[in-house]
Length: 392
Image 1 (spheres, helix red, strand yellow):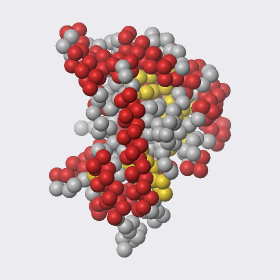
Image 2 (cartoon, helix red, strand yellow):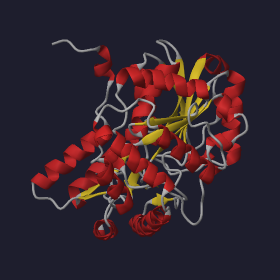
Image 3 (cartoon, helix red, strand yellow):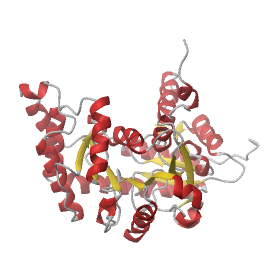
Image 4 (tube, helix red, strand yellow):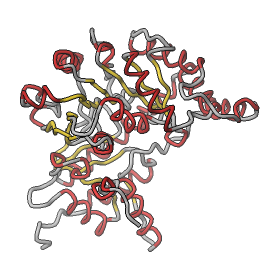
């Protein structure tokens, strides 16, 4: 059987590989503590579940849904956006529900890129930005993110011919994997750059509602002129512990929303309406669950940072996101240190190299692990000694 060339270009998706390793270790009897995948362990709030149970009994919800979602869910998204960010959206033209943000992010490349086109992709970054670009037959120009720059791209460093050829730029703040945040001014600079160069700006804001010590993330849509060139992607996965229910949304420029709708209309059949009813409840119901989640994650953050510091790693305390990004000692690759941790302590972390070339030298730890497992893992980290690179 002959398969497409694009399959040969695909590396194993890192989180599928992590899940496989965990399953193998546990099958062998290991007591594995995973700080790997960012999948909230906290249950979906009960009022949201109750809405699903109610909606599942309604026969119209058993049929094909519309690609652009129920009018009520689009209105709920627009209402949430105005309440949270002070930005008004036309629910019929500037809002599109998604089967999880990942689906929309992956499909977005097909809206803007033809074979041979150029996309500006940050590194380290969520792998789907680059994979979507490759699926569209386009080329990725890497925008390196450096710790010294607060993990923000240096727009002035993009070569002129590349900027002139680029059709698309991806940004993601609060950032996965680095947990970096962007100010209003940072996003305004990106909007101005993309307006000047006629580049579509796509901002992944999946972690906007996980902020610590009162930090509140900025929306790209709060920037004047952003709607001229931008789409922003959000997810209910991390905000309301709904990873398994698959609901996200894209908002922004009406023509860009229409383009994404056209792609989706030909490739998927929309979000089950009962799940759309869950989303309406999440977005319009009591929001105390969001603060409760953040309180849990902040407690875990502080414990893991303490353990990593005791171990001897360099860690900046995150202001947002579900992740800790830790610098590793010289002499190891991130994959080597992750392998040693797994082999010697039964702890799973994600190598920084899983997020690109410029993620090397770091490991990522997720805070979506139950408290007792976090404590167990931290005790193991604190009692472990980092071996010499030669293993001595």
